[in-house]
Length: 216
Image 1 (cartoon, rainbow, N blue to C red):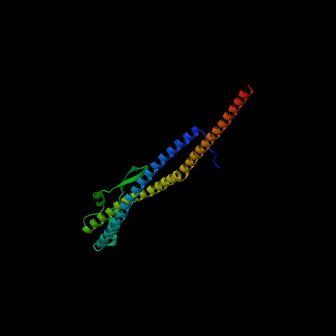
Image 2: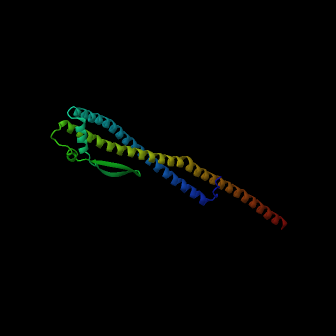
Image 3: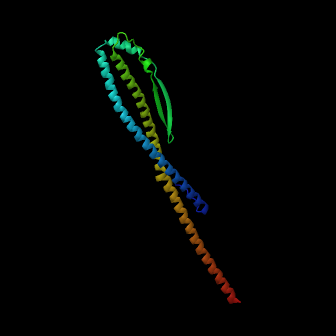
């Protein structure tokens, strides 16, 4: 059981100051939570749109690949694909949203280099379509990974902030306000006791004075 605070004016001022500080913190955390939730839904919509776009691009890419199969053998396509292998450059930055680092990833894929791994001689224009379509798919995959990473980080921070808001709202503030009311009650009780004691002392002094006056 928590020890009761001393019923003094100084302790009452301390409790009131702590209540004010807790309320300010509670308001700031609520603002942070609301801002994070807004950002979460904005990025969630972006991710949903990207998934739809990615599905569409994947469909187009595989359709282009299917058409290319009509012009080239599987061996030829595999040889071309091997020649296209290259490292993708990724430029990773981040922005701060209410203390949460949101990644911003840019894929660097040079179309000229990406398409220079195969000879134009002996290949059809359909190969260019395949390269272009799968390059677009690759960029979308990177962007989608960026948004889904941001979503996971935001969810984690939102839950953390909600717990802190609830702790202040339902635990800390009620306890401090109870302590404040308890101190006020005990101070008033002490004042009443002091008032009664003073009245008793005054009455006794008056009685003693009357007795002395009567004796004289």
